[in-house]
Amino acid sequence: MDPSQNANVTSVVEGELSLASATTSFEEPASVLRRLATDHKVAIVSTVVIVLFVLGAVFAPVLTPYQYDAINLSNRLAPPSLEHLFGTDEGGRDVLTRMLYGSRVSLVIGIVPTLLSVVLGTLIGMVAGYYGGKVDTAIMRVADIVMSFPTMLLAMVVMYTLGGGTTNVFLTMVLVGWSGVARVVRAETLKLKESEYVEAARIIGVRRARIILRHILPNCLPTIIVLFTLDIPSSILTESSLSFLGMGVQPPSASWGLMVSTGREFLYYAPWLCFAPCLAIMAIVLAFNYLGDGLRDVLDPHLQSQ
Image (tube, rainbow, N blue to C red; front, side, top):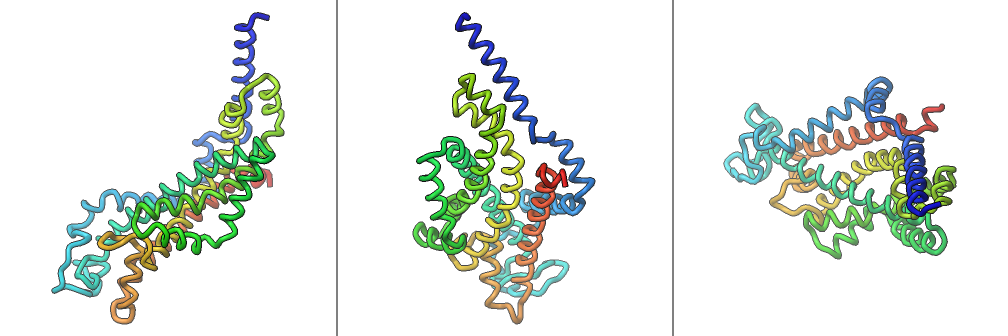
């Protein structure tokens, strides 16, 4: 057979295999949303809560007439009122305004580093699971070392080494979060690489990198989406804890964890300083957890069969 004809046949076969593998376990987004709205109304409510927080973070300058760092000592520690719905802090700054601006920091640090760690963990996990052997052993031993430390303790050690600041919090979240994703994706890859369409692609000479990206990755996407959604609240809590301990976001920036840390000194006679950011942290963490549970039930074929 002419080499060009052989290449065309290989391309056609690979395209059919790619289509088959991509549709094996991945539903259309419209179908997922429809089933989520029908069977998991709590997840839809959680989505609305998340959207409201995001809109509040984006349109913070429009929603409040105050500046988050404008000090007014004549109005310090004012209780909640129509003028200041959540009162003011020790510097006379509006607590609601600082919450809106603080949601920018908490949401960005919760979402962006989680996305980076999921991407990194996915690539590492697929490489380890597909290549196996010494590559798999080396990668998994590093992942085991990272996972052997409590997440908060490891994050504190990294932040102590790098120093405080938003950028270092980003790096810490990525360094701490990739290992769990890599282990889950590796397990999925070990199962998928024994599938018939992967074996067929390997037989016709498709390159390993192409098999990983076109045949294995699409079937890992449901698991990756659920992992991403469930890891966001963990990142938000870690950032809040680091900021509470003075190792995360530094003043004068607004962060929910930092607001709780500064408000604890006035807890007995100005409890609103801690109550408002704690309520925000609880609401956003619960919302992401419920959304992740709903997506897991919808996207997991084993749960669907039950």
